[in-house]
Amino acid sequence: MSNTASMPAPGFGSHPAGQREILGHPVGLFVLFFAELWERFNFYGMRALLIFYLTKSYLFNKEFSSLSYGAFNGLLYATPLLGGLLADRVLGYRRAIVLGGILMALGEFGLALPGLGFIKQTNLALYAALGLIIIGNGFFKPNISTMVGSLYAPGDARRDSAFTIFYMGINIGATIAPLVCGTIGETYGFHYGFLLAGAGMVLGLICFTAFGHLLGDKGLPPKSAANDFGKKRFTSKDFLTFGGAFVFVPLAALLVSMPDKVSEWAAPGAAIAFFFFISYEASKCTKVERQGIYVAIILSISSLAFWGAFEQAGSSISIFTDQHVDRTMFGSERPASNFQSVNAIFIVLLAPVFSWLWARLGKMNLNPSSVIKFVLGLLQVGAGYIFLVWAAKQADSGGKAAVGLLLATYFVHTMGELCVSPVGLSMITKMAPQRLGAFMMGFWFLTTSFGHVVAGEFASKQEKWGFGTLFYRLMIWGIVAGVLLFLFSPWVKKWERAKLAENSAT
Image (cartoon, rainbow, N blue to C red; front, side):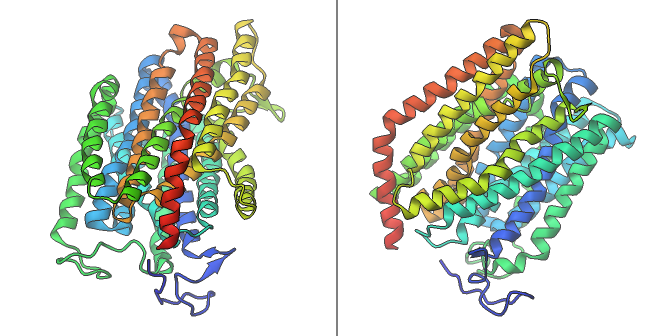
C-alpha cells in the first residue's frame, strides 16, 4: 500500500502526505476525524428528536413509532453494503463520501421544511426525507471508515488505536448534537433541531473537501480502463451511480413506511443475497483469506446481538426516560433528548483510556483477541440492564426512577460499546481481503442494520410487556449471547491469528 503521496500542506513540512504525523498518526486521520465528527453531529442531532417527532408531532402510537424507528436505523446501516461495493468498484471512497454527505444534508433539510412552512407536514414528506438520509448514509458511512484503515500498512499496531481515536471523534459530535439539537428542537420546534443537524453535515463536507489533499492518494477512484488511477474526470458509470442513488430513495422511503415488511422480508432477503455473494467471493480466496472472512462474519453476526440490546437508547429507553425518570439535574429538569448525549460523553471520557489500555496490553503481549473483546462487550450490554430493571421497579411503585440508575446503565453499556464498535471496525480492515475491504465493511454495517431491526422489535413490545420485563429480557439476551460467543472463541482466535500472520508477512 503506497504511502508516497507528495502534496505538501502548510504547517506540516514537505514530507509525503502519507508520512506526516500528528500524535503518532497520519495527519489524514484527523481530516477524517473532523469530517466524521460533523456527520455524526448531523445524525445524532436528528436521532435525538426522531422518536419524539414521530410520537408527538405525527402522533404515531408507540408500537408503530418504535418499529419505524428500528426500520429506519436498520435500513440506515444496510445501505452501506451497496455503498461500499460501488465505492470499491466504481466511485472510489472520496466521491462516495461526498455524494453521501449531500444526500444526508438534503434529508435533514427535508425534515425541517414542514415546520418552516415551505411544505405541508405529510407522511410522504417525512418518509422522503428519511429515505434521503438512508441512501446518503450508505455512501458515507462504510467508505470513511475504510479510508481510516487505508492509512495504515497491514500489521500496523497503531490501527486499533487509530479507530479508537476516530471513534472518539464520532462521539464528540454525538455528545454535542443531542444537547444542542435536542434542546433547540424540544424547546422551539423540531424543525429548528433538524435544521441545525443539516448544517452539521454541511460543515462535515467542507472539512472533507477543503483538507482532502492531506489524504494523499487515498480514496481515489479505482483503476480501470476507462478511468486511470488518480484522474479526476467523471465517467458514465459515475453519473449512472449518482442517478441510481436518487432512484433508490423512494424504495427506502416506502420500506420505512411499512416497518413490519423490513423484518419480514427485506432483512432476510438481504442476508440471503449476501450469503450467495460472499460464498462466490470466498471460493476465489486462499485458505487464510477465507478464514479471515469467517472471523469477520462471526464477529459481525455477534455485533447484531449487541446492537439489538444496545440500540434501545433512541426508542424504549428514551420513552422510559421521558415518562418515568426524574430528570432534574443541576436545579432544572432536562429534556429527555439530552440524555442521548450521556453515552457519547462517556465515550469521549473512556475512549482515551481504552486506546491506552489496548496499546499497553499489546506491548505486554496481553492484548485480548477481537473475539474476547466482543465477549466482554456482550456481557456488559446485558449487565447494564440490571440498573434499568431496578429503575422500572421504582417507576412501577408509583414514583419516578432515580436518574443515577439511567446513568449507570449508559456507563456500563459504553464500556461494552468500546469493546465492540471500534474493535469491529478495525477487525474488518484486518480480516477482509483488500479487494473486498469496503464490501466487508458494508457487511459490518448490514449486521448492525439487523441489530437495529431487532432493537425495534424489542422496543415495540414495551406496552405489551411493560418496561421491567422488556429490560429483564434484554439483560438475558446480552449475557447469553456473550456466553455462546465465548464457547466458539477458540476457533475464531485460531483463524484470526492465521490472518494476522499473513498480514504481517506482506
